[in-house]
Structure formats: structure tokens, C-alpha cells
Length: 264
Image (cartoon, rainbow, N blue to C red; front, side, top):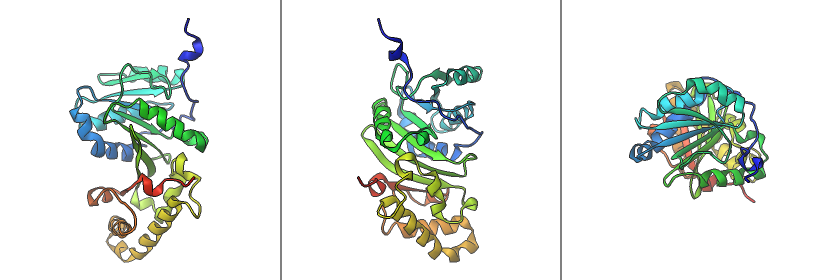
């Protein structure tokens, strides 16, 4: 007989804090970066892992993915059964809610797993194991997006991972809320937040970003967007920025994971 423990979801209950539009920056990036894969798939399934006390983020993820992949489906997965029960009245075509955790209790492999504000309560040494477990559940060509944002979605930092492991780190912000790029340090995901100290690559990156931002001060008269773009362009001389002006104009910059990967 299979034990009850074998069916217990993997993980712990999060605070559950959520707000409408909190993850809009992450969603738009996913749609731009992963939309082609979703369109090509016969059954493009995306998981909103740990959506919280209300289902808004899963509802919005479906809306945004369907702008680039009309047949996309979203499954919200929550470890708290009461949250699943509260979300189920919002189910509709392409949107479902299931009880579960890091094991991702679906019959197939999703093409996308989004885990926003889920790992902040875990210890840093646990992150690699969670990433590995989630990446192992991805379909070929799949993407895991794991990161953190503030309560109303002004500032985000996330890591994008494929089945092989981490690929990039993206910094995204509402530019009008920013005094300097290093303000984003408080939203670094768990794998990086404790590494924002001298001697670590992410600290050096944010230091250089602040310097580039200061040097771009003359562009502030044209608006924060122009100043951000100029600062990011300066960064490309020393850091492997993987995106271009189209994304920079959105208040984003994406850097290869290897450049920011924590030292042992």
C-alpha cells in the first residue's frame, strides 16, 4: 500500500501575499522570451506555482500568455488546500487549480513553471535542490522562471532556467520608482540576495550599474527611460547583457547567469 506521506506535497506554505498585476513585468518578459516555444507546442501548459491566497496571478498569466500563444493553458498549484478550494470557482477554459508543491502533480511535463515569491522563506542551500527538482519536471524546451518582486510589482529580479539549469538573471523595474539600480538588491532571489557583498559577482554588477547610472545623469533630462537605456549600454562593455534596446525600454536588463553566479 502506498503511504499517505508519498502523496504529501513537497514544500511549505508561503505567506500567500498577492495583488492584481503584481507579476505583470515577469509575465510580459515570459511572453516575449518564451512565446515562440509556447506557440509551437501541441499542448502548451504553464504552471503558476505557489500563486498564494488569491488566484489573480494565475488568471493574469493565462491572459498574457494567450496574447502570444492562443492555446496556452495555465494550472495554478498551491500547497495549501484551502487556497485551492478558494480558487476553483475561477476555473474556466484553459485555467485550473491543483493541490501540490515542488513535485508538480500533473500527468505530463509543463512548458513553463513560474515560481514567484516562493523561495524567499527557504534557506539558500535549499535553492539548488528545488531548482533541480523543478527543472526535471520541464518538458523539452521548457522554462522555469523563479524570482521575487515587491508587493505591487514595481521591482523584480528573476532567474530563468532551462532543463539544464540556470541561464540568465533579469532585473526589471518601474523606472519612475528607482533612485539607483542597486535599489533592486532588496528583490534579488534567494540564490543571490545574501551574495550582495564585496567579492561576489552580483555585488560588482550592481556597483557597476550604479556607476553607469550616475554617468548617464545628463540623459535624465530626457526621462528615466533614456537614462536607463544609456546606463545599460555602458554595462555591455564589461558584462554579458543578453537582451537589447527593445527590452531595455521596458525597464529591464538581462545578464548571463554565469556572470552573476555566486562563488563557492
